Structures are given as C-alpha cells and as structure tokens.
Image 1 (cartoon, rainbow, N blue to C red):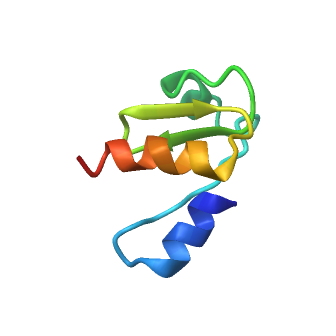
Image 2: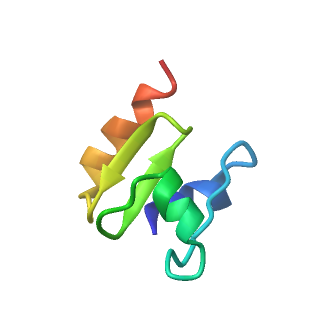
Image 3: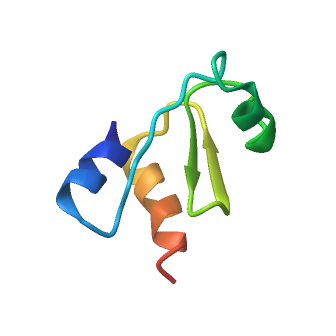
Length: 64
C-alpha cells in the first residue's frame, strides 16, 4: 500500500500490482517466491510486508 501512497503523492512514481498466477512470466522475471514482493526501480526487491520505516530506507537507496 505504501507504494501506491507514494505514487498518489508524486507524478514521478508509478505503482502496479500484478497477480502472478495470471502473469507467470512476470513472477519468473522478478523471482517472486512470496507475496508481497515489491520491486523498486528494477534494482531493489523487498519480500514480504515491510514496516514503513524499513521500506522507506530501501526506497531512499534509489534516490542516492
């Protein structure tokens, strides 16, 4: 949900949710082993439900 909140606040951020059962090629591409799996800028992958502060730390890595 935080990714969507960020996308609402900024035109520079987009967020998409995909059902991996319907798009197995994306599950393979992003190596989905559990859900939720958040991919940030194709470089950072966050598995599971991260607390907001930890998610923001990961998100901040792409800004550096």
